[in-house]
Length: 577
Image 1 (tube, rainbow, N blue to C red):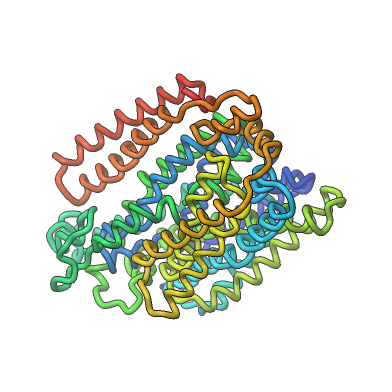
Image 2: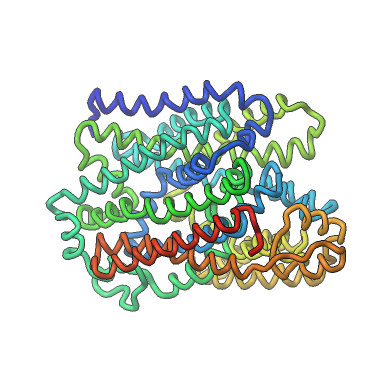
């Protein structure tokens, strides 16, 4: 693909902008770890929430969606649509609690919830596990997606693309800290969305596609359905199987750990929640993220993916179809803008992953166990150097991955079953450090067994691994002693979780009884209805019948107004009705 001087100018502007932000933020970020990793806990909701959205929009996402649609039709997106249920849990149950905990990272949670050497070991192991292998895997698949785009559009080989992208991102992240990351996210998200809309529009305009009407008439009906079909495999039809749908909607969203979709709202989402100004800003940031992630962003990607089925029907690597749209269908000027938007999306996600993963290695390993007596500027220097180290390790991982979806599935399987512990540790006093350790190890053993014996493959493997993991951690919980009442009381009074799971502890130590959860559960149902109503209402307008879509959108709006009023009436920071 030939780029004109205008295209190159736009692309260079996207590359220079983050470096300018980094230079401006470097001095403040270098003051302390709180500034470097949490932006001084001063972020407003709109900035923290947009940063969450921008982080989950990387070069890998539209490529993965294109591969998903090629394999399973529109309904295949339930692999990530299902996580909307967990995202609304984060809004209504966890955003306040994370901000209230007042900790530097979500891994540090284990030493306010548990006690003794087992808690310290869990903190170190979890920090190393998430900060190195998991984080390098995530950065690896983001790199892979960007490398595919640059290979198709500019002819760059994978190694050149990976080294160039990581070098640029690593420099600006190591300087700017979280404040610089979220400031660049704000602009990068806007341009990345503009680029996604442009790609879909130009692809639909191709005569071989014929616009939205062409998608409706030239693609099989099953491919456009939002729900699974029992007729998968008939002719050239692609559609989601019922078993996969049940695995995604019935198990995956609450049981599996995945970045940006963690049960209990952990990871970099928790980092933004903890960096928000107060509990109200934490809730609003997470709500804005959930609406934008599931209601605003999916359809430009999905429409472009459907267009690739008509334009490039026989691709060996369906994910590359999205990059071909950029190469073959964008006019001068738009090429530079769209590539710049992808660079922006890439850098947004990469910057968060590098900053988030490094926060574990510095806060929860180096400062906690190796050099607990160093000053703040020393820790910031170590953070900057560690960022560059993680960057190098991630480059090596990228060279061994073949597809984005493959990497997604590896992470989902490796964390299958731990989600229930991450939820219940907030709401049930009986969960202890051994419960969490067992839930981390069991899925790794379960997946290894399935691979060695030729057992169920993803996503059906989720049923087996989640059941195995749940049995393991419940058995370990029953066979090990609970945390001491002193530890539990300090945590309970600090975080004030509602629900019946703390009633026995509150009664024993003379603490105020926990509040009810029924109102929050009702709010959760309304929130989920709002998200799916908007998602499928917009999809219905685009691909199906407006007569069905408009009532769905109306119901979504009513649920949204009702939910907002409920939250506002309770003062946002309340955890009881």
